[in-house]
Figure 1 (tube, rainbow, N blue to C red):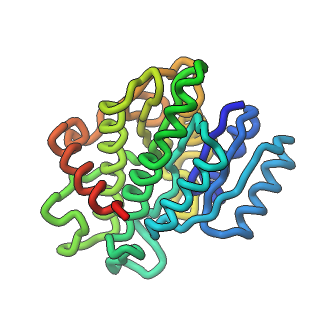
Figure 2 (figure 1 turned 60 degrees about the horizontal axis):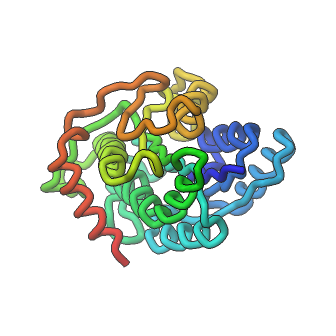
Length: 271
């Protein structure tokens, strides 16, 4: 049985994706911040799919110490991890209004949660992903749930201390996820671990979207396809808009920008 970890699995796309993967017979590890919602989600998915192979992991991704702990607990419980979906994220509008906010580690909040947490979690889980990818059933897969809303990173002010806006913070963090996926793909053997990113659907009805356009089902279809579709085994370093391969912001294709971002992220996430 393949094992998949879905971050941000108690709401919206993450919850629906966890249900979809459980319905396909995968062992699904659900992550979120609230134990009560986690247990509620586990029970709902068990009831709807009949799949008992579900586990709950609580962690606040705005705290890198908790991200490390999450990775270490998952790795200890599951030495082989076949799918990692970095879905958890913060939208352009959050409680507190348009003021700049920081994570527990003092980093701009969206950059920390949307990008740094996934970067750290993925890197720390690479041994489990490599072990799964070497078991002869095809490569393990890392999927970054990004967005079509992308803004080039300003390396002189990554934390947006000047001219801050929630939209700018969100779109910059989402592009950073794509750079991370392409960077991972360059590093990893695609026969063992692949990395892709996608814009799942436009304005799905989730808690971070005030005016939905697409359905959750569309986003689930696109994301699950990257996570498990046999025809995409070995596909890596690509960005998809829904079901179609697309071109991200040009910065994602700049190896110097990717290397610079990786160095910064590795430094910021070091214990």
